[in-house]
Structures are given as C-alpha cells and as structure tokens.
Image (tube, rainbow, N blue to C red; front, top):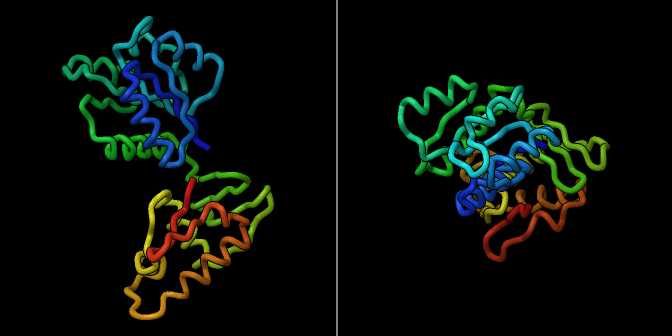
Length: 215
C-alpha cells in the first residue's frame, strides 16, 4: 500500500487531508512540526510527502534537502509567486496553496503518484490484495479466480467504498446499462464475491437500498 507522510502543523487541516487520503486507500502518517517530519524521513520509507512550508522547528523549504527520491507536494498558505518558484526549484512535484479543495488535492496526489510510478494501482485490506491494472485478486497470498463481472463489481465497490450504492447504480457502473425490472443479478454477484473472498463483513447490505463496501 502507498504510504504518505503528512507534515502540517494545523491539526484540523492535517486531519482533513489524512481522512480523505485514507478513504482513497492510502496509508498515512501524521506529523505536526519540522523535526518530527525529519525524524520520520530518516527512519521510514514513504512514497509521498505532503509538506507545509511554515512549521515549527524546521520549515518545509529546509526539509527539502532530506527528500531525495520522495515526491513532494507543498500544501501552504505562502501563495506568492516567488515562494511557488522556490518550492518547485527545490524539487517539489506540485505546489498547492491554502485554502484548497480537498477533492482536487486527492486527484493531484494521484497524479503525482502516477507520474512518479509510486502508485501501483493496488488496494489492500485484511488479507486481500487487488491489482487493478492486472485484474488480479489475491486472498492470503493465493490468487482467487474472479469472473470479469465479479471483478468489475468488486472494483466499483472499492472505488465507492463507504458509500451506499443502490442495485440500479451498480448495474450502471458494472453492466453499463439501465436495467428495468429484476436486479437479482447484482445480489447473485455480491454473494459470489462474499463467498470467494470471505468478505461478508466488508460488503454490507443496506436495507431497501443496496450495498456498501466498508473499510
């Protein structure tokens, strides 16, 4: 799983960014000052650093000399052109100013990870590993044979995790058509996924609605 270090001294912003990136399937570590960020960079390997410029003890600009081979996105209130140019010249991959749109931030994180080839387009939970590009699924290290529509359904559930999806919505997402009448085909495929992957506790039935993949 992709690991992201978030160095931001404003707790509310740090929590907001962490919450949304974890929803997107990333593992996050939070620090609140420059010294703690440096300690993490020296001790552990991260795939991306989201870095505030103005932090206690060490600034984001100072920390750039310790970020070799780690993609960096500056997230800062310093919006002057000179600051943006400085951040990019120091080696940052992106520079986002506050206030920011959280959805845009998540998309820019994905773009940087794709560009730097850090994101293998893999999602892991419990003992299940999904490799989306290769369309392969593993349970406890053993590959599980999913039929094409079963895989498509699993992908749709994961991409919309923690959201209640109606059977009609899942039909449009997976089968790509508006289905009028019997929606039992969704129920059948859900049961197969639960059985093959042992994830009945993850795929929740939402009363009079549909299903929700909880993570």
